Length: 132
Image 1 (cartoon, rainbow, N blue to C red):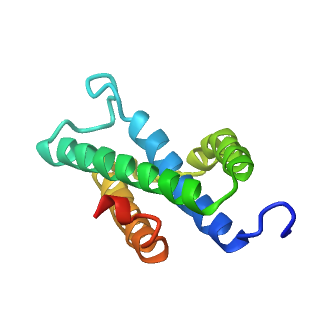
Image 2 (spheres, rainbow, N blue to C red):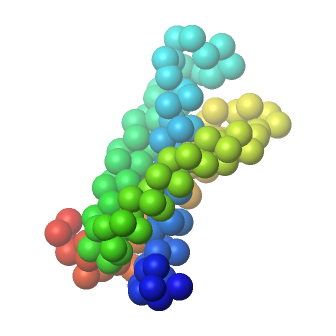
């Protein structure tokens, strides 16, 4: 493994952060446009959750990219990001909600992204000093 990527622990962390961001992107993208999705309410809470999710997703993907760029080999970063891009839609297909409650889904997604961001800033503190 060390010949492929010597920093394999950072590779695992990057994979988790980037996968969380990619799944969040696809879930949020599936909610647009707001006027077409019949099962989704157009309440101010849902719109605020979508905006909050989009902001968190952008920060998470940007932070994961900076973390991966500073900790991993360039070739490893490209291959792993490509695999995440390829297989993230399969994870979204498994993101099933029996009640189809958009507010609960978006609220849970906010919680998952906040947890991923907290772990990212804890694990990659030195790599992410650019943001502080």
